[in-house]
Length: 463
Image: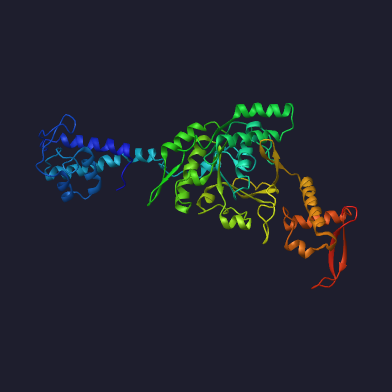
């Protein structure tokens, strides 16, 4: 038998014991202030009698134990004739069946199957997005990336964009309340990032309007405020939801269009393995369903994914069950993959790319490329248009060819080790663009190991 929830079970046990005590066969004797106004003295162990005669042992003995049997609490005992034990078991079975529907409702279990006509006849509202199509409302979005890839900056920028109705990386937003909860950064860090985001807006009325919207629509909790907001608890055997925390956080963010929670490693108390992450995903889903907000969880990418620049939906660290549960997965990577010999710190402000790796409620959104820009209060992310991307790529390739000098570079060399901040494809496109403009010249030459290869150099005006 499946035990009911604690509250329902306690009420059931009280009714069972009350019904038994009303039996004329029960022998009651006073023995001390232990169970309400009635007190009992042991003649025979209730638990022993039940164990001897009851087929449904666990439920009955637990009911009597919690009610105060001789085996559970000294001084509280009952004499139970065998016939009454059998009657008690029958009573328990009846009571259990009567409350089963109520228990199912309390646990959110479906009372019945639904007819397919409901699918055909119901007018369902369209999917709405906090940021279209990256953050669907009422659903969970996962944002993953390596350390130092500006995940928090991008996530906070999304909140600022929703709060002000401005675009995020060129994508339209639904203006409304936005909530940013970080268990990783202090309030001071959040303040600098918000001020830096505002510095990315032209001075004057436009920035003043954005600041007014931020004051009205953006709410936050920083590390010092959110220490106790872990949504799960893990011991050696299992992971469970912290129900009170999930409900409390749902109340705090009610009415929000977008909620960002970071990071998963602090929100989820335990190893980032499939079993625990599945429970964590259910807790986050509860918040999304209860509030109707787009709930984004920021996660770290796996070490291998960080090295490889992985952009699929399983880039997140640990098990894949959270990514499976998320309806949208966003992956942030450098705009080009690292190659052997690269200095990781050579260009900390190189462009970064956001890839929409998974979208179950819409078509995937286009990739977004941001250029980190240093401002007075930190760094903000400037989205690059295609023309700006081409200009930025061309600038990097020109700097690379200047460093190479008169020796020039072959297409193969450029493919094997493209300039810092450029992918192989971007380097090839930039080379073709500069050649079409006459800023790069080419000639067929013999190299040490290769004969008749094409070598590219800057034209004299650019050199």
